[in-house]
Image 1 (cartoon, one colour):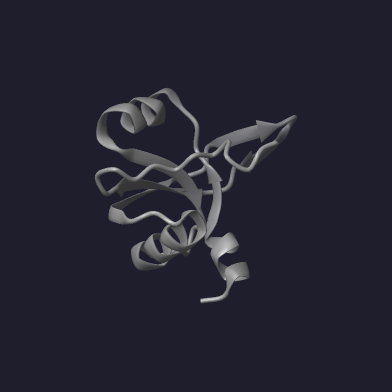
Image 2 (cartoon, rainbow, N blue to C red):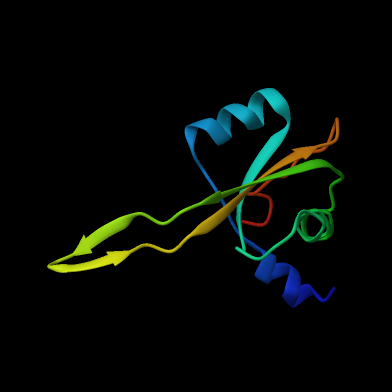
Length: 99
């Protein structure tokens, strides 16, 4: 799998209260991923991009909300979220490259 394909699978870290609690207590990190990404693809992408070992991957698909944009009815995009459990002693530091 090429590096550009890996960047197309993992879109962004998903920061929320639940995600922060999981990171502190259960060695889990939450990412927003491509809607068509599979668990093995997500696992390989995380392991290669962040040089960590992944224990398990759980995914959740979110349906886009129906919204009105002015007077025009519409719908937000569907999206997928991945809960990544890291092996004991592993950690992803998002601020390591910021500088």
